[in-house]
Image (cartoon, rainbow, N blue to C red; front, side, top):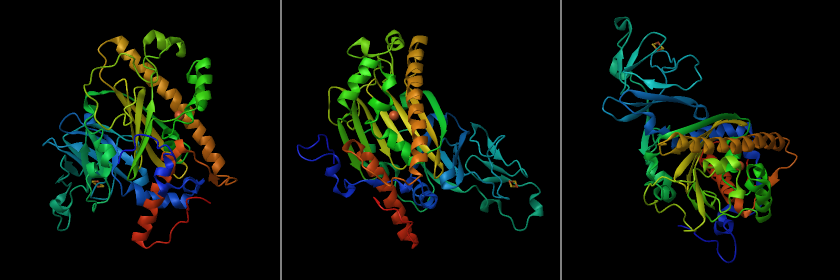
Length: 429
Ligand code: FES
Ligand SMILES: [Fe+2]
């Protein structure tokens, strides 16, 4: 399946004729009706990454996730047997949210021996069984065994915790993630436990933000100020061309050059980067993590810098050549809003200097993400005018074409299963 090199004739996009090459409609990012179908068709019918095993270090560790798009909140918990389980975050008595602290819509985490409902005090153990009912004898034929927490399918893949909200789902995460997942499954994600996390409420459709991170064509222009000016002029002149693109089922990846850790010429980078020996591409002095798994750097290019995996629907993993990685999540909250999460993972620093180098990579990343985020709010507002309805995507934008098509296909399949009338969104208008 791997397409390592652009063929002599044609393009990346033309290797996948089903993607087409025509202009693409963004009606799928501005239609409230279409978003309502996506919630069901995509977010209640796909494996969703909700976190990592390091977030549940011991028995009784738990965290909640607000999956607004899928219309639920889930509790992820490590049981007394060490197993990770997931449950809908709802009390079986009268439906109160079971695990929350001060604000019902906020996510929480912690460690506990049991979950106690704030409303009438029903209690559940870490395996989800109902263990205590206040004034139990007042109830009518109530068998506690019938009132355990409602389970959610959960699976751990390379330390990433996934949930699936369709109880009838029979596909494993490994099978779902396909060959692109298999190619990086052995990356030492578990060794990178130093975490820097950003979260932002962005006024743009979730797919628009994935679009911004699934192509680097915009980088030399939108992020020009991140480089010293001589360098950014040069970069704009060259433009951007990826080393490779791959598509497998609903997922895709782009492999890109790097070479900035360290830069060939120290004048290419800002003084603080020179002083700290770090920058966007990470600390220049990389930790030893052994052999990289075979799915990385598919073009086997000398100047490889990063691979960016787009796992449908809303999970991205970026592995960087200086031996660290990033994840992105995009959690829709409305047709024109989502919560973006960017998380950087490093091998724990061994000195204050190493820590500062990581911090510099983290704040540099934040600058980039802010530049992307507010551009996307501008895009969302503009496309909602419907003054323009179809947009030409170039060959470096193949993953965008693929993402929007995959989403449209999932929606159409779902509507066919339900026998619903399709919300009319075509590939191009
Ligand atoms: S709603 Fe939870 S105990 Fe009544
Ligand atoms: Fe960007």
